[in-house]
Image (cartoon, rainbow, N blue to C red; front, side, top):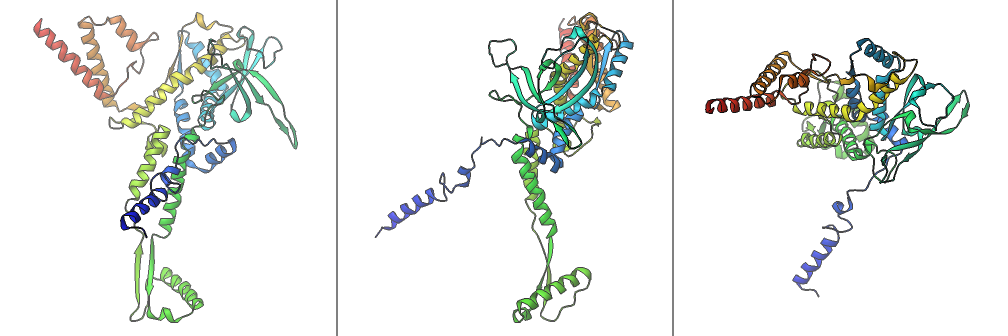
Length: 447
């Protein structure tokens, strides 16, 4: 017979191996991070179609990137207006928005460049700019249409990691007949948007893969809240006579009392009987929901208010999370969308039958300037401009920078603008102005 100490040791071993730490039944051990869930195109489509939060995460950043579009600055203002008109005819704004939506949703977004050239061409051949006549259409599509991406994997090649060719499914349907064809397409005939790609994979990674657990928790939270609201309050009827009736009679009485107590404001009960209301406890639910929303916002890199559909507009100094979000959108515009837009505009300039005729883009001065995503109120805007102007005056007075450099920095090569080439919020501007002014005043007194 085991002694008491031996029994305790045995119990400890059983506990550690059973429901304790690192055992087969330990739920924390069974939950292993890093087990990737790779979503199929069908699963991604179902997630997007079924969940409005997923739609917001996918759609809103794409809409924000293109909502205010951009201004094309040229010395030839008429040519700039004509090119912007052609982009409007081609519905370029909508095409770029959908391309970014597809990139977030499926990992890759594309725009096919429908062009006319001087001579017959094949899609697998590189697009020659000097033979362009017109750009006829822009069609956005996703990786669901692409069966293969051919990436340059030579680490000693200048084009390492870049797309070279892609194999596209060109299915066409007319009535009940379908024609399935595949074509090898040269990368110069498409615009490609991709921001998340693992080194050992060709296609981009859907944003929804990393958000899958958070989406599951939010979906569970919605279902749980519905159940809680459905049974938030219920009535309890107590009577000594209940134990003397049959199950069938209990069921009939329950249905009758449930109808009466719901339909009538007055409940008639006998002596010794009780009727009370019970509420479902909800303490702690807010903290759990806040955690779920916070995790989702962090994973999507979007503030909760934006995910919930807050419209862009005039911001106050306290909305730093919104300002940071728009700063991230601005960065994506400059680093990811701008090169694609510049390539499209260069093609319009090269095309012989487009506005202006054939123009070498390198022989004219032009610039893409994205329009502001948000604005401050008029009072804050006036204060910012005053602080910046005073700061510039101090810089010029102390010989830190010349007036010509200030003019170029603040107003650019195309004249006065409504925005500054300066980043930061009003608090940062005030701190900078105060620091510069204090340093100047101190140096001036000691001079």
